[in-house]
Image (cartoon, rainbow, N blue to C red; front, side):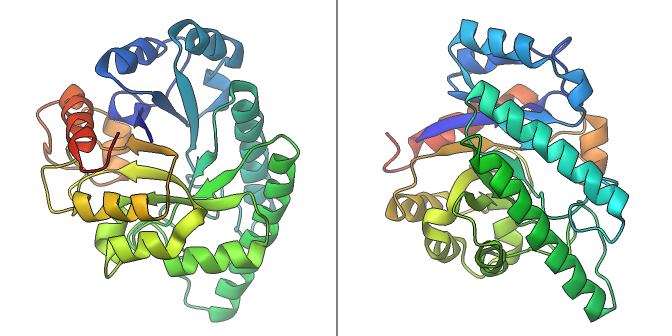
Length: 284
């Protein structure tokens, strides 16, 4: 098992002009991976990012940002085309950087409200299935896996729990499609997070570690011991990345409704969170 941290903890939007220093910062803290949250591909010079990673000996994970206008299941063809173009860029980047799965809630746009019309909901689901199938085929040709993220009910109306995620995987029917599971979202939505992890099994491609208040892992109500026992039971060998937030990154704080201080500072989230995760039973 490896550990990473998401660049959203410190900066937004990520750019190779300003943020490559985070690579060495995370390495010094003891992380194995930097999870690069790409909001705007135009701000990311892949050659520069690759050179900085190789110099440090770190690896990346490519984390997608799926806001309005970047919706793979939208009834608007323009929004679907935007999402497809963005995902292809992320897939190509992951292949170039040998960065593991492309992650994020790529089936829809974050913040989309529930539709009243059931027929439209079914149509959106079908569009998500067909879009993801196309993206999976594109990714498979490049040796890349895709990991979509179930979100809580306040952030999406489409996939909130593991059961829905498994249905989406089954409907898409591609072996390189799995899930990114997030302890924060699971704490809100699942009846039992450990049971959900075991149910997901080998379709867990990536893990986000965040406390129930999105603060420092280990300082709240998430049952970390049970979650990591479940990860051990499914023989999870991937990356666990800390993804937490503070009001200092205003654009992200607004997007995820962080209105108060939930950690002493950004570095504490990463440093103390990593210390806690590495202290859990069974973590080598």
